[in-house]
Picture 1 (cartoon, rainbow, N blue to C red):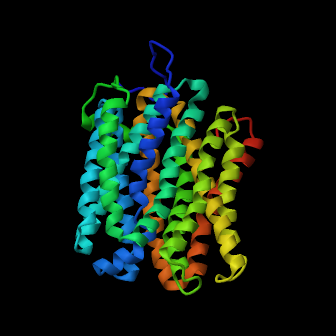
Picture 2 (picture 1 turned 90 degrees about the horizontal axis):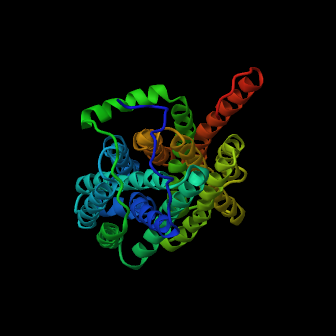
Picture 3 (picture 1 turned 30 degrees about the vertical axis):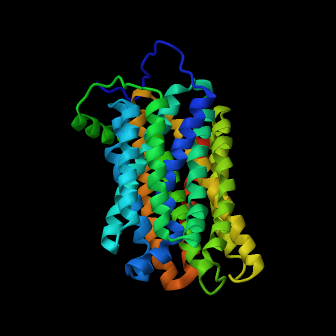
Length: 411
């Protein structure tokens, strides 16, 4: 039977080399980038395939839905199937999906490929728990933060890289190049990725049935998922709508200009290792408050003055850095808390955690595209600000309840 809180015994202290950490980080970055290549290319893809402007958010939303499905139905297999084999299967599936996306001739065909791209990218959420399994408890947050920094750099570089390639060739070249990268990555991982055989012995049905039980029995999972759900909704809305804003009449930036703007978000990747180290030192609560506040402040900064001026663009760049830093720091804080629980459930806990907030991300992308079409950045930014404020209100309420009682709990 599955145990939810008592860690299983291990025969030896886990260990992880710097080379393995680098491999995991690079693999995560390349896989995760696949989800985000389309974000700055929404307009040219939609125009090329005849997709209506108000439905253009589906290009990102369907990818995130596919990723969410993978998190629920594939990522938990990390607790059941040998991890290297599972990751390589995800990489191979991604290569096929990307190759077909690069030659799609209709909106419906491309959207099907988008969902498949998201599904294959779930391999990153098998690699991250693998890093946690290989790390000693004392530095687990640091290791998870380092691996996540690779993932996040991949996410953030995906946008400017996609914009640059599209400006030199076409949006189709972006997906063709990524397909080739996936083939190369699969070959490298098949030779170098450590083998990890899970100890769990159960059927796939029992594995899936355990997800609801884990969620019900793990309050910290529900809390951390709530915080990140609020932040990731805002994150997805921000990065779906800002390329539309920058390409519009206020700024009239080219794909190269949008690529330079997206590069600002790369600096937010430092939030992951910083958060991991703070969590290892016991500062999860204060780091959580800071991360949530940064996202809210990022949106508020864009509301200070009307869009279109140099100052407004500078504030938008600052907001991109703040939003990315806050969101990436908070996701690592959540992972560190979850990976401190029973090792045999890490794959499922992580899958439920990521799937929950990625569903919110898919909604944020769709709502963002709709809001921008209806009311431009003023409406989109107001909607994006609301969830971080809700998360911050819940955090403050929990802190006030803690001060008013003798009950101790983790924020």
